[in-house]
Amino acid sequence: MAAEPTTRRPAAPTRDIVGVAPGGVVSGAERVLLRDLVAARGAGWSVRLACADGPLADQARELGITRITIPDLRLPEGRRLTAATRMFARAAGASITLRRATKRGEIVVANGLNTLPALTVVARRSPVVYFAHDVLVRPDRVRLLRMFARTVRRAIAVSEAVAGPLRKLGVDTIVVFNGTPWPVATAPIPAPEAPPVVGISALLTPWKGHAVLLEAMALLERRDATLEIMGGTLPKDASYAQSLRERAQQPDLAGRVHFLGHVDDPIDRARTWHVAVSASTDPEAGPLTTLEAMSIGVPLVATDHGGVVEVLGDAGLLVPPRDARALADGIDRLLDDADLWARCREAGPRLIVEQQLTLEDHERRWLTALESIADDDN
View 1 (cartoon, rainbow, N blue to C red):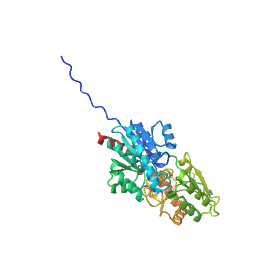
View 2 (tube, rainbow, N blue to C red):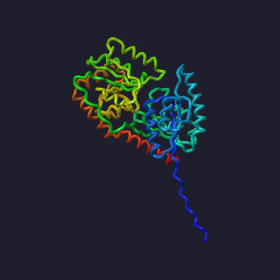
View 3 (cartoon, helix red, strand yellow):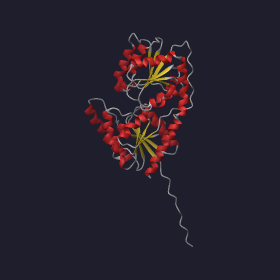
View 4 (cartoon, rainbow, N blue to C red):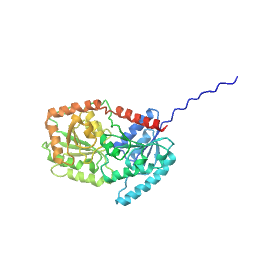
């Protein structure tokens, strides 16, 4: 008697992701990408990372993430036309590498706008997901997205502030808010007699607003308050960082400003602050530093635009951007009003939980978004 035919079940689709970063440095967007790739690997995905040489490649190696080497895709220094020409030439080279390295159907996570020119060919056979960490306000950035919007299958934006400009350009966009580790130890209540410490955690680059914050510190009523500036400096911003140090040496600030550089555990250092500041002059997308300060109960003064407005709530105060006087007044209010300070301190950790802004919440939503894209592609 003939054997009955065996019914074979179709194999489950392979889940493959390659993240593509525009450079080799590690700032907030790269931290988020690395965490998410590790989370995807834990959920059974095969993950790789394409990036240039630098700290990002080193960290990926330490995490056991296979790396694809591509050129730096960020805009080089120099005259804009020359720099743009060089950037697109590098993108062409990266495109060839990525076309050869990626698998058909593999999800390609473009972790920055400058990666899109290198992914136009790849997008013909693999879904490109634009992981958007920036609020597009500059006309040149909007033009760049308009040129390559068709490359993007879907965008994952870290706030509604980020999503708005993308949707206006017709990009299918969902919002997955950033998250912060939870639970974490709350910052201790400072001793009443201790001189207050104001802190900012941000790369020393002009749009982060350090220069405005220094002017605000000079205007504070609390003359015993000191400022800690935590964050590294990119080579292109060396002159800006030097200008901050020179301003900090002027008589009205001398001895009151401390540059910490890169700190391995920024949350632990922030626990020593009375007030945290986000002074960005351009809108922040979904600032991790805001979530970190909220999670440990450090009240925040932030500029009133971008993604911070969507999450801060009663955990701090919002002030107009580029306004040193308003920033100083906000800091003074928190330093002088013990009841207000206590309310903001209590609200931060509560809002992290209520608004589902933990790292676990973020990773769950991010993986759900990728699963949806993978299912649509099969």
